[in-house]
Length: 122
Image (cartoon, rainbow, N blue to C red; front, side, top):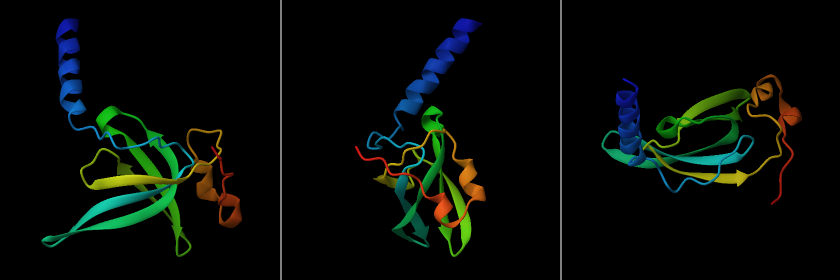
């Protein structure tokens, strides 16, 4: 029975590896990113940008997601992106921040200048 599960897992990884994106750079928690999304309106397609700070990363192979938070008109907006989705054209990292946590959920309760993160220079 274990050999059956082992070969089944290997075949799933083989199929998933064909759909993984290779052009995604190193994205870490605390980075300011610009996500280029492919939006379909009727029969037209266009690229829409979305900027924000990565507050969490969930690594799960093909199902890897990032949660991006930004403030829009005084309201905090969080959006979860599936980074290997064909709807995401590319992800640009604008700034790196020095953080000591894996999840930055404490930024939800802060507002204004308290949400700033210390920039990391390479």
